[in-house]
Image (cartoon, rainbow, N blue to C red):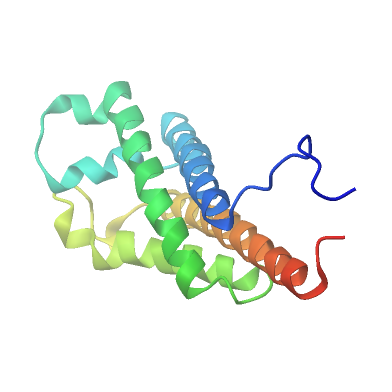
Length: 162
């Protein structure tokens, strides 16, 4: 029966992208902090504070969690970027490469901006591998989630929701 007032309303695609970015940033930022806390990487989410010298608090727990918050907000922007640039690409591989591209942008291209960050080739291997894997998983989460929702939306537009 169509038009029933008790039917749940479908979230818009933009809201789904926003939530994907929000939860992706919170989830993978928290996992990044966990990897830093357990010494799988020498670089935690507080990497974002390294562009400015702001004192010792940035490397402590409060600085790390504040950076996870910044990462979460930036992740919403990243999710909308992915939505408008790459959402039409089917499958998981674009999300994989998106994560690699983000890692290269942060750890190689933007490296000179981060005052206390070692050059990429001088970092420990475990830091490189851990952060690369985290960014790949983050890219997969954002990319595959958004591409899947985009494909579902296209299917519903083409064939109807019933």
